[in-house]
Image (cartoon, rainbow, N blue to C red; front, side):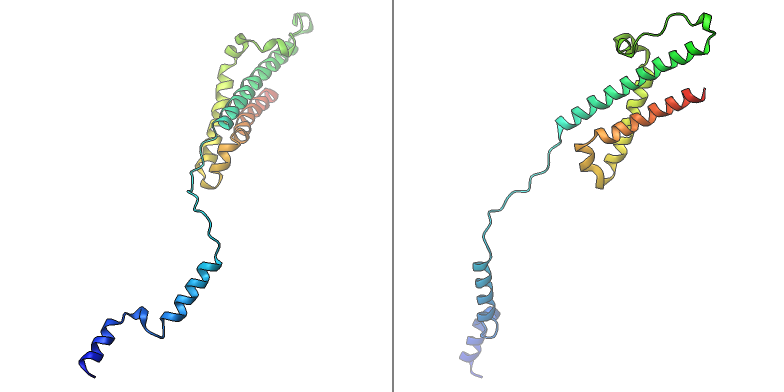
Length: 161
């Protein structure tokens, strides 16, 4: 081989060789023509659903307080019925009259414990990566299960005692 022939081979890059260049260039060109061009969308991180979380907190708090007041009134009725008929006194007022700030203050421990159970169960659901997104949007579901579970436990204790 002559020197000029070697220089000619050295100047060629592997992409320019006859065996590789035309076939792949044509395939890439045809693929790029056939593929639809779509504008790139920036992936945005899903935000925190503040309205859903606020709704869930209000709903679970209302259920916790309401359930604790209902159980308190039921406890008063059971205590009244346990007395002799002569000592029972006046009937207990309707449930609607129990929803006052004073009754909320009296039942705050059971309400706070029910809300704490709801928060604990929600945090457990939030800790699992598969249920994290759902626990943000429907936080009231594990919250109501947690609060309802504690209130049912108190109800069960009333039935036993």
